[in-house]
Amino acid sequence: MKFLAFLALFFGLSYTLLAAHYLSFDHKSKQDELREISKITRANLASSFSLKEQKGFVYDK
Image (tube, rainbow, N blue to C red; front, side):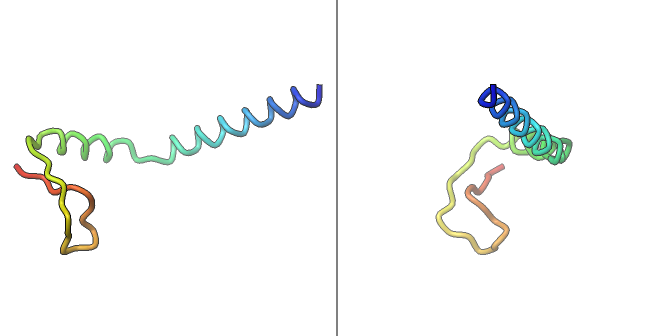
């Protein structure tokens, strides 16, 4: 019985943390960003960057 209570507590806390993590995102800005990226036809992996804010890919329009 203790095992079942511990298991229920574990999953309850896990789902609570998952829900809090999901609700912490700004979904509208992420959707807008994904919509803008989806319009781009080519994405080339960049090997070097001149700015710290640049990450991973350089997009050609």
